[in-house]
Length: 459
Image 1 (cartoon, rainbow, N blue to C red):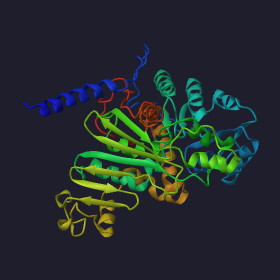
Image 2 (image 1 turned 60 degrees about the vertical axis):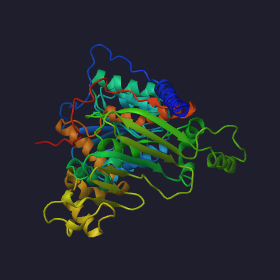
Image 3 (image 1 turned 90 degrees about the horizontal axis):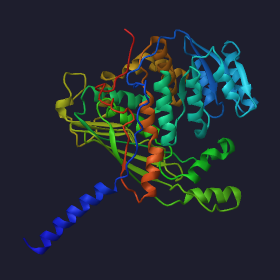
Image 4 (image 1 turned 180 degrees about the vertical axis):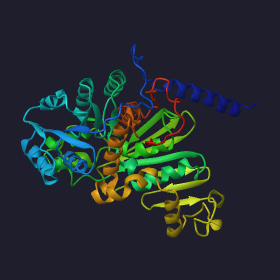
């Protein structure tokens, strides 16, 4: 063996040992005695779901309005630190001929009074990110199920707190990730569950949304401050949710390793200088962040975050399977091998080729054949009520439907954990030279308990 070959082998061995050694480990705390996992958990049915809303700024009021269209619900209480927001939202109830809700405002701790009530089943939290986890934990400890806006948690400590509290109290802890109910995503998920794409190998998602027109509307500038003080993908769930459902995360597979990197900070500091007249001494988050994830079953996920550069809105949403492909942005389309389609429901399916997208006529026929069961259930009303095209209403309706019928929720506390963990783990990776980071098993061994992601329906 010549010296060049020996050098290559030595380099490969060294690279392998360094890669293994360089992965950053994450601790999985032991499950406290007496707790059991919440995988596929179903609570006792609640025929009339009584709701308290905390946070009536940008998203809360629309949620209250949507709930006026859901049978078997009652808005019991409204809370916000600003009294005018409470009054404005109260009008949505009176306009819908609903009873007036109790009001809480004016204090940083007013929300606790709402949670302390004994006539509320569900606390719906739509506040700023830093208060999501503490409010949810407190509400569960007071005997309430909780639904939390995205991201529900921004640190591993918060994530484990929510998991342990949910397991201990046996209360649902669901994150309000609406994008899993977008019509294209939901229908494509149903296609994947019918093996239309073969085995799904790789999925992509993102949150690419230039927020330059929205920054002034965040109360006390909290969202820009979070980007200023943190690196990494601070808002990953819109991309992660649909991606993880396609790959059956903690329902037969789980994430194992994550690597992230970012660009330098350019537009963030420039925005602060433009609006305040002073350039910030620090701005940690890069304009664009990329994350690669590997799963136990050898699948991969690619996630991006960019809220600072002038780009068209995109959540990417891309699926690569052994027999087909789906893509939403910038153009919705499907590409399939011809043998994946049987029968005559898709015109000219014999001439399909995965080298190009099928025609719009074929895609429409495919969607009609594989319409998601949740779209069939409530899609038409969702389009009428609205909320990001209807997906917000489907999210709320499905939450209530599952509570009313004593079914497992569409999203559980481990979905919350897996989708939110990118916030701390991408920061950890980037701060250590884009080192690989171990992704914890948030189910603590229960990730193979259920085989495949599915919605639950009453018989």
